[in-house]
Image: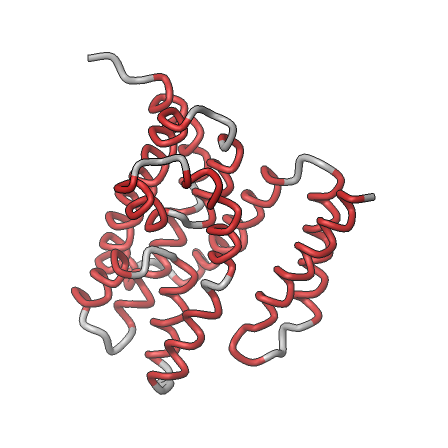
Length: 223
């Protein structure tokens, strides 16, 4: 049975972005293995919290003995940017079936948004096929690689420094998303404000940087 064009396009587009996800997931698997959490609980958390940065924050703070309220608050703060993703996709999801409006947000991670935001003008059924292809690809690879990280992570030599995967992942997404002057202005403003507020507790600098980027991008587009 031939593969639909939208599915082929989704697979083609997702492969390059999946490359830095693998070491990121290995880092998370290693963090889970070194934390007090049972490995099975930590791995199942990858399905409950389908967001690497949020889960890594939760696991790290839990391992450091932070209180439940602090762990939950930090995880929510890291995920705050997803409210902006949801607002941006609300008009697109409005024309989709109800089952997709319930299921689709579960897959709305950074990479998903970066890729599918370029397809918002596609017909609803075409957008839906592409969106689900990208989302399922990320979900399967993420769950499998986190499980692999639980097993092989503790024996990976420290000099490999897999931590590079996290910034590399977001640099790749940022590069793909900068396709206009307002996007460049937004990226520079967000980066500058985030860097300047690194010392703000609970990683609120991420939220401040996001709002600064939005404001700068909107201002640049109006000019």
